[in-house]
Image 1 (cartoon, rainbow, N blue to C red):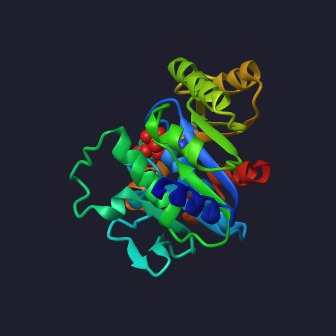
Image 2 (image 1 turned 60 degrees about the vertical axis):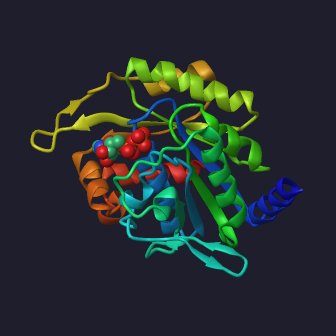
Length: 262
Ligand code: ADP
C-alpha cells in the first residue's frame, strides 16, 4: 500500500513538470555532470523554470559544480524543499544529506533506488518546464529505477567523448535506453577537439568524427559537439558554471544550440 501511495505521489509531482530529461553516459569522466549542470543553466538562461536532480547517489558532484556544498534539504508541510541556485534552479542531491563531502556513501543498489524514489515523491519541485536528471554513468540500478518510476520521461541525452573506447560504451547506453523504451533525444560529444589558446591550432585529443559516426550508426541525432576548454574544468572546480561567466565562448554557443534542439 505504501508503495502504491508513493507511486501516486511521484505521478502527481511529475505531472507538474513538462519535460523530464535524463543525462546518461556509458562511462564516467566524460563530462556528464558538467553537461547536465550547464544544460540546466542554458534552459534557465532562456527563461524556463528548471530543476536538477542529481541521481548519482554515491558519486554526486552537482553540489560542488554549483557551489551548493553547504546546502541541506529541509522538510516542509507537503514534502522536502530543494536547494535553489541564485538563478532559481531547484536542486536535489544526496550531497545535501551528508555532513562531510569526503565521507563515502556506502550503499547498495536497493538503498540508492529507495532514495531516488524518495526524491521523486517528496521533493517539492512545483511547476517546472524542465527537470534535468543527472544519472550515474553506466546502466545500473539508478538509471533503471528512474526509467521505470518516472511515468513519461521526455527522453535521454547521452554524453560521450570522441575516443574509440567511449564509442563502444556509449552504444550500451543507447541500447539500454532503447530497451527501456526511453526516447533518445540525442548524443552530445564532449571534449570534442581543443583549440590552443596560444596559437589557435585545433587538436583532436580523443580522435575525431566519433560522434557523427555513432549517431549515424545508431540512427540518433548528434545534438552538438562541445570543445575541450580548460576553463570549463576550472569553473567546475570553483563551482561557478562556465556558461554564466563566459557567455561568448564556443562552449556556451554550443550549449545554447543544443537547448534549441531539445
Ligand atoms: P562525469 O560526470 O562524466 O564523470 P564530469 O562532469 O565530472 O564527468 O567531468 C569530468 C572532468 O572533466 C571535470 O573535471 C570537468 O570539469 C571536466 N570537463 C568536462 N567537460 C569539459 C570540457 N568540455 N572541457 C574541459 N574540461 C571538461
